[in-house]
Length: 109
Picture 1: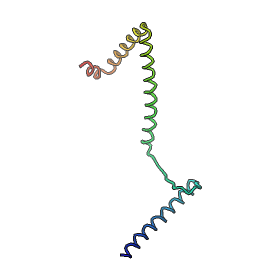
Picture 2 (picture 1 turned 90 degrees about the vertical axis):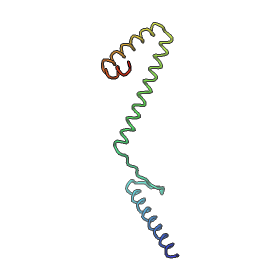
Picture 3 (picture 1 turned 60 degrees about the vertical axis):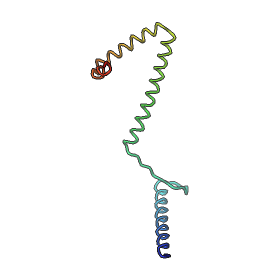
Picture 4 (picture 1 turned 30 degrees about the horizontal axis):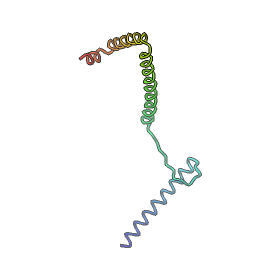
């Protein structure tokens, strides 16, 4: 029983020494002088690209939401602008129907 216990302890000591050597190699490679544990995280290009595109789309939709809210407030305040906005929105929807006829058929049904 004691031999198995020593083997387990020996394996743990070997593993800890190996990790310490790896940490020291990483500190030398990246020029880190602290004794804290060093982790190198590598991301794929696809992951970082998705994060960047997500951030750009999020900002775009926030700006779009603010603009639509502003249009709504203006339409509530001034009745003349409400009529113009209804005309503009109808024209936009008509152009979208011409651009995407399959979607227009889906919306109509």
